[in-house]
Length: 403
Image 1 (tube, rainbow, N blue to C red):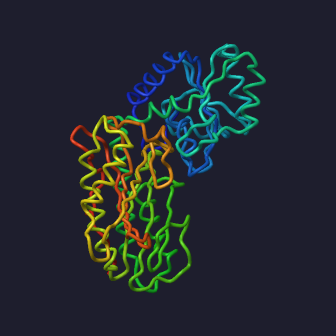
Image 2 (image 1 turned 90 degrees about the vertical axis):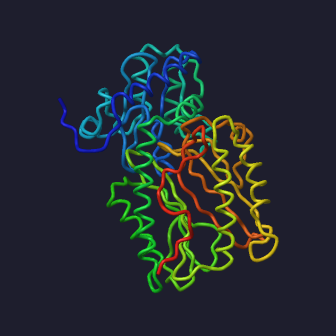
Image 3 (image 1 turned 90 degrees about the horizontal axis):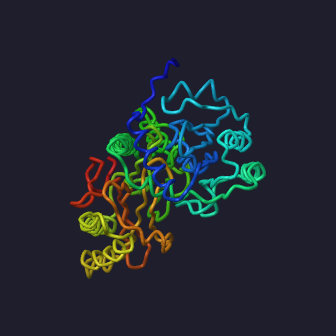
C-alpha cells in the first residue's frame, strides 16, 4: 500500500457521490466516456474538472488529463506520474505516465475501453464560464480524432459545469476553510498597510499570511492601490503608500484546490468621505439581496432586484446621491465555476440559470457614484439556502481602515 503524504483530502464517500452524479448524466446523454484535457491556465481554473473527478492535482504546473468511463476505473494522465500522484490521493489508482503527450495516452486508454466507435464527451471544447473558446490543445484533439475516427465526439463541458453547481457538505466545509484563510490574509493586509510601505510589501504580507495558513499556489489575486482606484490590476506596483490611499483587491485562497473569494477595501489611516457614504449604499444592497439568494430565483431576477434595491438605498443628496449598482457574482469551488454575472458578463444562458440550494458564490455587489468616478465593492463567499444567502466568512461587513 502506498504511503500518503499528509495533505488534506476529500473522503471516498465524496468521490463516490461525484462519480454517481456524473455517470447519471452520462447515461442520460448516452455518453460512454468523458475525456478531460490537461490545462493549468487561469490560475489552474481550467484544470478543475480533472481534479474534481480524479483528486489528482495541486500546484501550478500539475498538468493532469483524465479518462472517465461510464463504468470501471478512471485514469489520470500526468508527467512524473508514478513518483507524485499515487502518494497524495486515494481516489484514483490508475495513474499513467504522459511524458507530456497527454492526448496520445488518452487515445490509448480509449482503445483499451473499446470506445473508438462510441460516444465520447470532451470537456473544454467550448462553453466554459471563463473559456468560451475552449481549453483543449489542438494536438490533444488531433490525437483523439485520428485514433477514434468513427467516434461520435460531443462537448461535455456543460455536463460537468452543472454537476459542479451544487456543493456537498464536504465541499462547503472546504470552502469555509478557504475563506477563513483569506480572512487571515485580510488581517495581515490591514496590519501592514501603513504610510511608507510599498504596495508590493503589503501584497506580499497578505499572500504570506494565506500561504502560512495552508493555501496552495497559484491563486487569483488582483490588486491595486491609489487615491481613488476603480479597477484592480493583475499584480501590485512599487508605489509607496500614503495617508488616505485605498487598496482594492480580489483575494482567493486554495484549500484542496477549492477557492473561496473575498473583496475588502482597505484605507490607509483615514477613509474617504465619499466612500464612507457609498459603503452605506453597498451594504444595504448586499443585505437586501442576500434575502433573495434562494432556490428558484434566476440570475436575471437578481440583477433586476439589484437595481430596485439601489434605488431604495441611494440618497438623493450628498456624495452618494443617486448611486448606481453593479451586480457581480460567480460560482466558487474547484475553479471556473458558474454561473456568472458581472458588469460586462451578462450572457443570456448565464442569466437564465436558476439558483439551487447549496450553490456557492462570491457575492460582491458594488455601488458607484452617479458619475462613475468612485466605486465601493465588498464581497464574501456565500451559500444559497431556502432562507436566503448565508455568509461563509466571519469578518465585519465594513470598510477597513489601517491605522
